[in-house]
Image 1 (tube, rainbow, N blue to C red):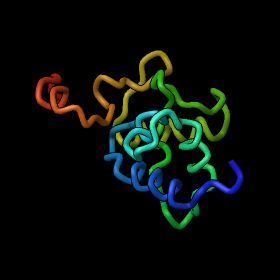
Image 2: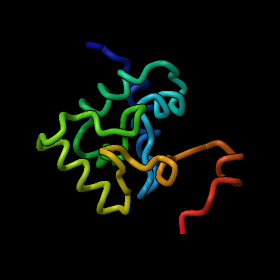
Image 3: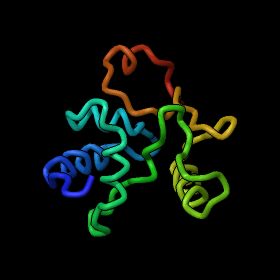
Image 4: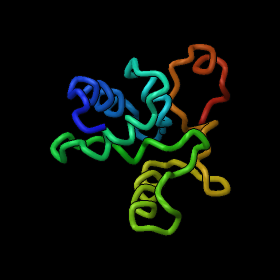
Length: 117
């Protein structure tokens, strides 16, 4: 992905920046929001090369199964999980409880999903 167009990266960074506190999005979901369907790996690359000054909520991005992609027990894994838990994100069997924490643009889901009181 060397030489990746900066404009593509910026689209991804903007999509990541919009993930609300206490919610998560998948790499594929971010790619779709950035207008780059089927480019989930590019999202991972964009997060890896993002300038520190952007202060992106990178920890809110999880894989399609709702799991943290870093190796379990590794320092980055523990950091990501800690940041998510500090925002009230709950885990079940090592995965984010996406039913209650997944960011969605689906109007039906927003209207009819059970409330998270």
